[in-house]
Image 1 (tube, one colour):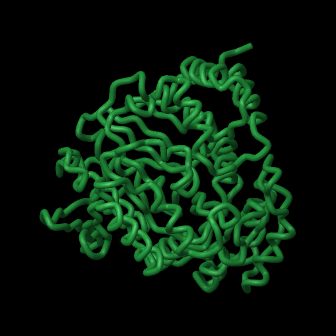
Image 2 (tube, one colour):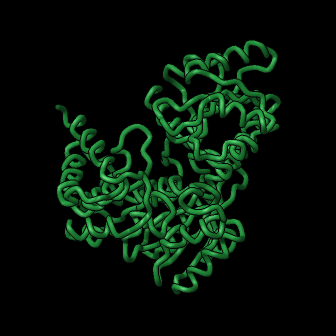
Image 3 (cartoon, rainbow, N blue to C red):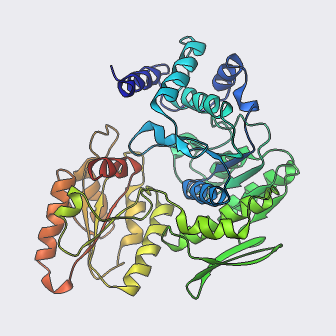
Length: 440
């Protein structure tokens, strides 16, 4: 058996240790970490990032900026797109097959068959790996919520970050924005600086009250720091001055906000992590797959109409859809094209809320709905078609990604005067992962 096959077998075994994929408590991972000798207390300074949308992009910006300054950075993110190894980056490199297998086995043996969720035991494995490699910082992304998330075992991070809070994962976090914000604010620690991205008033009030109760210094986007585009550049400003910067490599106005939040986090951490040349180089070099990622080659792109733009984004809730739609509106302003959405979504997501921002975005907006390949929790293409039609979008179900792209070509041939289309594959990180696996 290959090392890769061995790792897959271990991951499959760990999935069976708890009847639920998600069960938000901290006692199980705290117990396991104690058995492992508390690796969570042997880490480099931690940047802890929670939020509903943008937290992965903020992590990517922070990593790019820090690495551009020559620093060694650990990163923990989830979910992965193609391979589990993407979740754990050790001092700049993805964890090796051998080391991943070793730390997973070690955690499995220490756990001794006790009930524990997959995310909890794999987070413990990541912390164990991080504790064994020197680095200058660890960027730690919350998996779900914050207060009871498995990453919230860090006693005193260097800085806490809360990106925009919206309605998502209501089955675990509640249906009210204030309650969800309270869960996210659960990562705030006494006296530790908190950097807060753009928020609705209700969420902001909850975060501010939590920070005040813990005497945690707080910096809010739009009040204590600002990031915006001006004359083809990005401007960042806070109490320490103004930076004239290149536009970030990641596309869309929301990525300027995410970049600003990352810069603020590095500046407010007070650790000399935000040298201006590092910020400039980091913004130019940052990479984060499936966030308005332009696909230029591969079998799916080959099926697209000649001259078509093919984009991929894993956003999956109404707040993310608004951000994506705003970015596409900017594209449309510069170059008008008919828009085709190829969309797959999980059953737990608000499909009508996701589709609504795309209505009227271009001269023609057509949605082709699919079932996410290999994902049991996916909505069916027909069910998603009904949701798209309810929001007023022209729609058609497809059998799979290839059929969807062939349908786009058929629609485009029927509208020859409109020119090559703009195609967005969207609705789920699981779909994005399937696309990247198929189209690499």
